Length: 299
Image 1: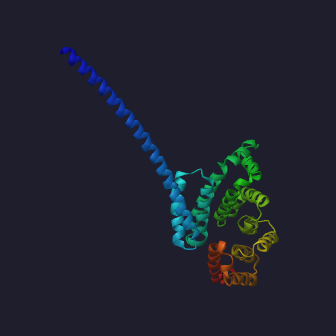
Image 2: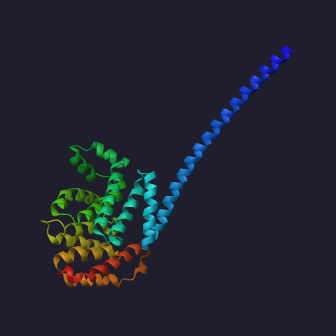
Image 3: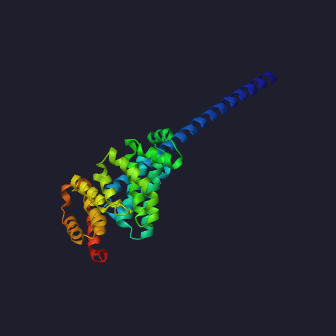
């Protein structure tokens, strides 16, 4: 009787031990599965944010859709701060808000500055650029300029939107501040020009046409030359004409050319180029805004 009791006790202990091992194993498997599920769900959630951001960006001519695009992409970029393409898209969204939607000057500046910082970080942390930067010589400032002048084509979108947003931010700043940043934005955009001169509808030419009306000591004819090249390459992109009127013709005091060029923009049929319709709609509105201020701009 005592022997049977001892045997049953031994069997119970073995069974309990097996049960404990089984439960612990099951708990471990479920925990791992749960972690994998959470990780998968997180990836799916970020992908959803990016998808919604891009869908709303495609409808950016609607200011509400543009705001939604900014919301979704800002959330996505918090989860993927090192994603180069995402940073560039976010920068474009902020630039569009600052240039076409926001009316408060201080808020415009904040948008341009934030956009430039995101693209700066995207370029500096890009693996292709990092290797170039490591090979560059000199102190930190000279080393950065040297690396930017030799930047690979893979970072061109980051260079363009970094320089574009920074220049827009500096546009309303004192001359000394613009001069302090001149070399940086010139190096970035000259590199973009050498690698992809047609980027964003002749964006580098449009950029220098605008910049060289805001930097003292530069012949205004240089601005005109760049704008003529941009218009020659991409006349269908209304931003080239609007920028030329806003920066060059206004600076040169060419009121008649200013008026006729913007009037031509307003009369343009946008249906021929659906891929750039959103920007062209914005630039039509900006042309009307500039014409409404024509008298004060040429006083």
